Length: 443
Image (cartoon, rainbow, N blue to C red):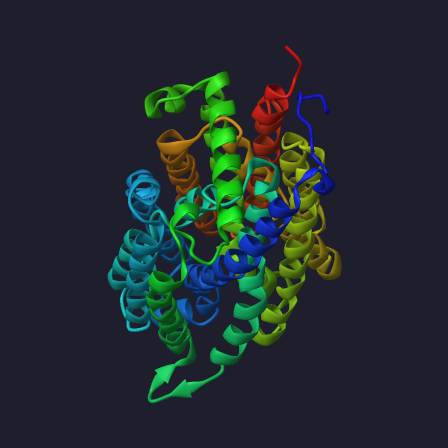
């Protein structure tokens, strides 16, 4: 048992039926949620690659681009909480399918913008379309994975973020060089990448299962085992405290989680949308070289999330596993402000800082699942993510403003370093007990 009063049961402690159920559920669900999150993230951030040509073609300044990117997050937050509750109380597969089909349509239409106003409108409606996808997926995973496996499940979901860069970067590098039917390559980037979301949205309706009790693909004994395990976890949480939605929203630990996530995403989403531009301006490399270099943080991110998520579950520790990657990323961006004129060192710091960051996600999202369940958990996931996603507006606008105002990247790098370190400090200040470890203490 660790310092937080939690225990990490070994796999051997599971019954044979439990081990079979875990494997069957993981093989059935995790590859598919990984795939649809890849498509989601490619469609959300493809504008960062398109901007290597788009702003020049349309005459957009850094401030116009930054504001347009940020517009997505202003509307994205509107339906986070109700959308997450819909997943909990109605149907995950139907709601997620609706999200995917609508965001695919909006992504395709983004390929036809010509003015700043149209760009703002496209990003505005993309935010509406995608809202509640991520918290809905977190809620969905809590329906199928126990607390002691949840960080690994979330890591498998979140590994789609860097994996999207592995796929999106070379595809973007290729499409930016084409010119078909009088349309520039950056327009085809939006058009072609919107189609898979529509197709997979239709597949989702038939492939996903909302609840374990509805899973005909699970044998009866495995289905009963999972239902009983999840019910036991629910009762353990309620013994510590049975939160209502409003009580969860007012809990100081939740408020610190929200603010920490906001700071982390202020830096992370700013970096994601600007990193192709950062690499280009620091190095002067070609677009294809830039997109190739961005494979490095993507590979680091996949490895970091899977290893950190596995180790977090094994040790039943969440806080340090969340904070260390954030502080490491902040350190690299702080160093970047000092070596930005030394191209090899600057590129190394930028890529390493971007890669280190990813590892914090799975451990971070396991923290609120230790405290909350049912509607309170769903609503709180939506609240954390919605306020956090406002960092996408704040970070992108701040970086565009600082770039225009200072005519240098140094201020933006220092800003990103500061918010990462502050986020790590806030997460370390939390103390949340593992309900399973607490329930197993002798009375």
